[in-house]
Length: 140
Image (tube, rainbow, N blue to C red; front, side):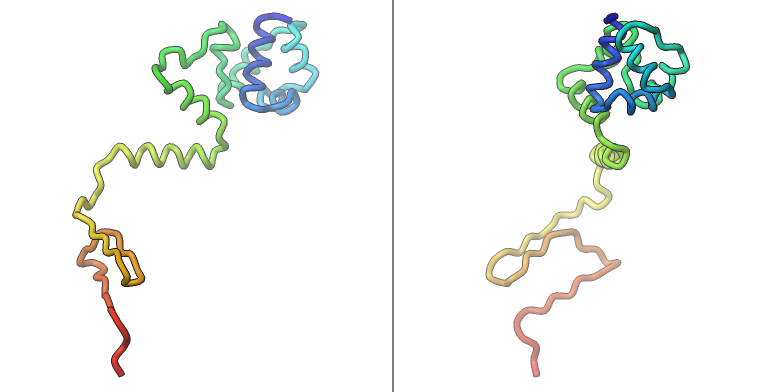
């Protein structure tokens, strides 16, 4: 098996795909995928371009060097984990990261009321939607 074939197989397994699923990503038949991985054939640019659009590390497939080689610390783990998520969860992570990078719109202090009142109140109060509190029983 060629080095390129081994790396192609590594990427397929990293993404948790079988040969047929990976072949579909690249726009080829399963037999072509098997030939690429065994080193009997070399993939063409159209195949590699399609894989690149599917978040396959084509730089690694071609050279053996991960495209994320410039990342530091656990950034590589984060990127690798992100790539394993489906689109819905990738969107959630991007939204979370974008939200963490901004100051809160309303940085007013919050009040926590705890005790035997039966409720915990946590949050910001503004004049747009005033809260009403009722303690005890209703008067008759």
